[in-house]
Amino acid sequence: MSLNPWDEIAIGTVAGVVVLFITLGKDKLVVEKDKRRIFQWLCKKTQQGKAWTVGSPINDPRWISTEEIACALNLPQDRVRYICSIHKKIRPKMKSDLFPNESLEEKWAVREFVKGTKP
Image (cartoon, rainbow, N blue to C red; front, side):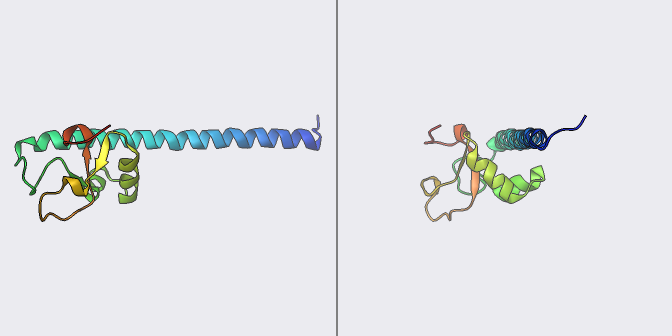
């Protein structure tokens, strides 16, 4: 049984669309997996650090650098930065979070663990 050219084009198009959906779905699953890993690690790390100095600009356990997250979870820093920026329960350290004379660094925290945050 031979197919005419239009049938071959239709079959090729359907196969291409299926592959596209599978690829996009896989990428979305990987993003969700990374979001969950980073959030759980941030929560655990913050809970461990609660006994440390609270209210001090030095070693504030609520704020964790992109580099530290990336090293702990074996992810690229760009990936960590992207995931943290799109996660609704994670937020970056901003100027309003700084103590006097503290410099702004790229750090992240779980929203519920830092004051003055809105979901």
